[in-house]
Image (cartoon, rainbow, N blue to C red; front, side, top):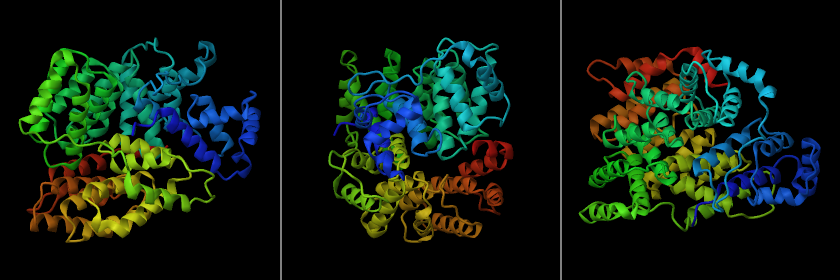
Length: 532
């Protein structure tokens, strides 16, 4: 099955919100067109609504914001998800049409005061909100010729934004993620954004790797390409390897690697991946996706496709498949159960919702899973899908592999529902749970809405350390690092100090201690700013 075009994804999100929303009157296309015309001041035929929602026509930010107002949704709820989907899938949809450019360009005079106010605000630590970052960078994105003086203004802006981004959650995280992506793509601001991302990865005092590295997929800048390839060749650790793989996969698809030296380095990276990608499940899955993409896209004239094929025939593992063509019984069950839990009976079946679930459950690519789940989370399907997935997993956990458990638990975390807390806790304290299952459960705790009290966290830590002594695993360090991160986002600073200090003769792994040390040193003003 071909991936859904961005327009279809966004159209589905709009239609699901309108048809399943609280205002029954607006479920009529004719009534919604009237309300839209009254709100926007422009005449609109009901057929225009249909074409937007089927993905036949693009929608810009003006349209998205009107949907938000009419349906009573928080500002930028739909707009930011739409921005993320268009960016992730590229500027062109499957018809070859260039994506929308946002709102109509405004004159310099009309934005001058607001523009300067926002720019001044961005230079002050902890002064911005997610919405302010969105407004400022959207304006920057509409001005590709913009040059700031002194140039260090870009560095200040990027430093403040990225510092908030890596600790933010949910909507506030997504607003900042898209804001940073716009800066990375700007001709004058891009180099500063690249420097900021790479400096964070290299900073030993900041144990954050995946986000700043994967952000580099937003730019074709040669320095960004070189740094991603450096981390493929010689990553700082498995997390940096994950971030580099995520960036390289999308860069490959976007055509960022354009020179012969870059392709030679990719081939060398492929040789290393075929020889073995280590024990981390995410690195293994992403390695397979990158190799599959290389086999499909390597240029014939350089003979690199043949080289990769030769490496494969010399004993490398088979290239894993992506999302199955048939999502199977599991996806069908989830669709049926979720639709049955909706507050109103859905007026129609559709093929987008099952496709999004299939991606969220089966894709090896964490970014693809993320954006598929975020689309669902921006609609009334959020709670029904969470309930359906939890029920399905509780009933069939023994039959599921750790990869499916991991993707489902992470989906529940991204849907921001607390219902999976007991299941995660049970896996983490169960002495019979395998290391991959415990790794999946631990990875679901950072930034979840569930939260656990200090007593439970202490029991979980004790159980993991006991398991590591009884039956050591290559995943033990990753489990404890994820748990330290989960305790951090739960707000347990006292427990983090215990992790940082360790106990006599029993120190925690360095990555877990680094997380604890970093988080306890974060200024309270920064934590508060990232929540706004």
